[in-house]
Amino acid sequence: MNGVNEVEAVNSYEKTKSRSKLLAIGAFAAIALVSFVFFSQIDQASLIPKIIIGLGGSAVLVLCPEVALGLYPLVGNVKTDERLSFLGSADLTIVLVAFVWVGIIVKYFRKGIKVHFPAAYWLFVPFVLMMVISLTYTPDLDAGLDKVARFLTLTSTAIIGPFLVLQSSREFKRFLYTYGAGAFLISLNSLTMLGGKERLTTPSSTTIDLGLVGVTGVLVIWFLILPGLSFRWRLIFYPLLAVCAFAVLGSGSRGPFIVLCCCMALSLFLYRNLIKDAGLMVLGLLLALPFVHIPEASFDYLRLLLGGDPEMGRLGFRSVLMNLGWQMIKEHPLVGVGIQGFRYHTSNVTVYNWPHNIFLEIGSELGIPSALAVLGILAAAVWQAVKLLREATPRYRTLAATAAAFLVMGLLDFMNTGDINSGRVSWMCVSLVFALQGVVLNEEARPRAKSGAHDEST
Image (cartoon, rainbow, N blue to C red; front, side):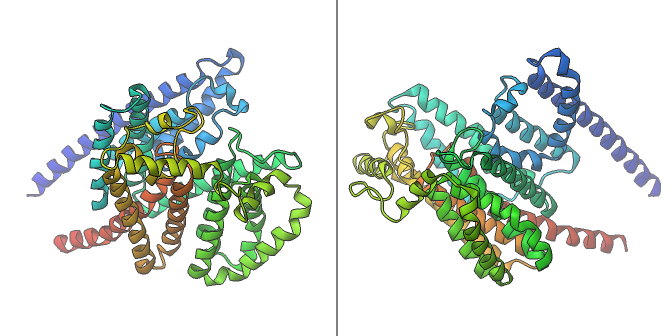
């Protein structure tokens, strides 16, 4: 009997060893390929050190896909920065998506992946199916194909990636730390524009994205890091919070400002020990405002929250687009006008290409049933967040609160800006609450599995 067990152990070891070799070869090939794409157009004088850095960075992204996933929502904010021109003509969004999926494959062979998809995600099936069907009547087939392809590749990575990558609380935290650190650096970079006349932007020159990036930095620091620290240690993070908060104000973006206010209000219910910190932060920001020289244009845009255009309201031109989207829904309630068809019913197909509300966008292009399917997914996410907050043990309390805060950010962003592909951050925020539930299930199952194995051995 012992001989049989020894033979099985040897065979298992040989299989594992063979799998590890294949894994190492595949990982090295992926790293070499990405490095070649990155550096093929760089001058020879600086090629060697950059390849060394690229190989090391690529190895980290492949072996720790949660790091690549944390950078993915941020890459669009920096990829057109001239300081990254040394990377050549590679699209960094596509490169990071490739890293995420190569990392998932490596992770599967190294550790295995146990996925807990929520039942609500079956609603994506009719939604995607309607996308494909609508290609038969969309006003522009090429634009429709491009939108569908982007959703099935780039956007789906934000939706599915958290389930495949974030398998433990350690990986979940590593993802959030990466996301928060990147958001802080982008926020810090935007402060170099202080004192100018224009609103602050990301390196890719977008104001709304900078607002969301600043909110991201605040959420990671405030919800994930500060609650576990003593008051003295929390003081150290105040300047970092201030950088992110000034980025939100400097962007002048109303949506992210509303998100920040809502999330901070939520935090006062979840973390009573941070009430004093919230008061000190608000006081500090008010006292510092006269000295940081935020452009007046930023405040002018934020003042629209108090009173907008008399004819179009606080939403400005977006109210016109939202009304147009609602009109299309009434005229085409079941199947819509076709994927990416909204823009061809506006006065300017280049600028006015979506109604700045995901429900109006989906309803106008794919019909009310598709909009209800997405509404069902979002409603399930809200319920899951509430469930996590109610049932979370001390071990998962900060993660549950952070995931809930990100969900608030995603839902509010869906309501007033972006489209189904530009809102990848929002889709990821929705998936995070479900992915965290999977983490809890995985980690609760491990002690039971070990206990069961011990009982069998005895």
